[in-house]
Amino acid sequence: MQELSKNIEFLREKSAALPRLPGVYIMQNESGQVIYVGKSRSLRDRVSQYFHGSHDSKTAKMASHVHDFRFITCDTEMEALALENSLIKQHTPKYNIKLKDAKSYPYIKINIKSQWPRITMTRKRLPDGSLYFGPYSSTSTVFSAIHQIERTLGIPTCKKKFPEDIGKERPCVYYQIGRCVGVCTGKIENGEYRRMIEEAADILRGGTRDVIKKLTEEMMEASDNLEFETAARHRDSIEALRKLGERQKAVGSPDVECDVIGLHLTGFEGADVKFRDCATVFYIRSGYIADSEHFLFGGDEITLDDSDDIESDTGDSPLSSFLMSLYQSREYIPDEILLSFEIPEHDRLLLSDYLSEKSDHKVTVRTPKKGASKYLCDMAVTDAAKHSENSAKRDKNNERTLANLASALQLEVLPERIEAYDISNLGDEHITAGMVVAVEGKLKKSEYRTFNIKFKSSQDDYAAMEEAISRRLAHIGEEGGSMSDYPDLILLDGGRGHVSVIKKLIEERGFDIPVFGMVKDEHHKTRTLTDGEYEINIARQADVFRLIYGIQEEVHRYSVSRMTNAKRKTLKTSSLEKIKGIGPAKAKALLEHFGSFAELKNADESALASVSGVSQKDAAEIYKHFHKS
Image (cartoon, rainbow, N blue to C red):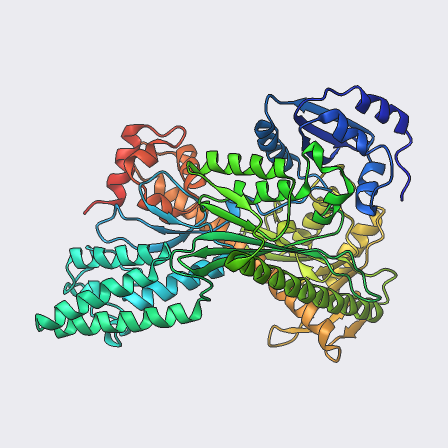
């Protein structure tokens, strides 16, 4: 066990003086940075345990860095549970389990208030009267679901506006091959189209079987009425829905609707591979696995198996905190949540009460011992174990690739943190430097950064790159800063000239960071790496080449996208300023509130008027501008 901090006696005395009340404790290091947040129904009993006795390596490591702590008492444990989650989001402590923030989860949206509703993806849930489904684990899941539903029911996928574009142009190829009902032809009545949208909503709710039954009845009725074209369309939709059901995994009867959480714990570390704890969540709707998520835990986090290290009667199980964080981000919570693992009875009841209050209906959290529910939990545990094993194999391959890269470039340390930079511009406007980061061989998008270059000259890439790197170096070592970490390797999208300029800058600033340029061939593909003097051929090392090629493509994509977004935002803001009463400040506020121009255009007057600084009169003018017809 690692040594506890030097002021251990002070911490023991301070924790012994804590009240035996529910509350939240906030651990801080010597610099005052929050490193861990926890909750307990007895602050004195819980906090004291950190500074007495022995602990596993992760808990001991956290405790050894504690210099002081703060605490907040609460009236109830439920209040402490909510406060703990809020403080974890606010401080993102190093040793807490951190899940994806709710704002990053995608939803499926159907704007039913529109005369001709469409199905779209969004990351913002607005009070605009639309139907929202989700959140989903990823955008790929969302777009896959939208694509399957649109193809199954023949809902238009084009960018035409209805009813404005009805009859204006010839129908596209999707109508000709039967993939679209052809709203643009004017042959589909609005009532029939809205019934299709209702069917789409039923499918998203998990009612695939009900939709098939309904379509079958409509098909027979259309056939009896000699409406053979309508009957054929229903027949094709039924067949597509059956195929969709075959692709989804049926795990129960049609009335099964629950979340299943399976936990695979492993403290094992092999000779050349590290296995991490993993939780799998199956979101089961109408007997099908509608979506799933995987959560890997490890590194510095006090992980789920550390719950045995602290007495559970204080009400501070890491498992309970994980579940709380998981459902804090979700809009819909089913009546039942099945766990493959046990949590303290007190925490289980507290979590059930909290989720029931949040969802406005009774939520039961339980650990089944037998039957179909136990089978579902076992299936989730098996899936978590496979995911953990696959992750360990990927980590092993990444470590081998980094070792080969270090050997090829003659680096003194393994490049666990690689930063790559590229400059993108549109004339002398919107000159942007993109920074992408790869940690342990994997791209980490949360670490990406954009530098809007102040030096305005599209002819001087060197000066733009120098400005970007100079601003980046200024953040190294900042306490708690988002760019405080020291890069092991810097890659530039450029040749010898870029490397020479940046090497000189880094030396002047007193840093010792290896810098290499990613040189492209005549086909704009990665050819070699250069240290400013010599070129190193990486083509024969397939794993190294794939890593560098992937980083170079990503940094180019990212820098171009950020530059394009900046230009597009300027154009959209200026177009909004053409509306009576809307100036630069209001235009910016509107775009920031709705997140995209499409969301803004589809908003109703009440949603527009809810934006800070936008009056009811302004909202009416904006709505009128986008709905002139």
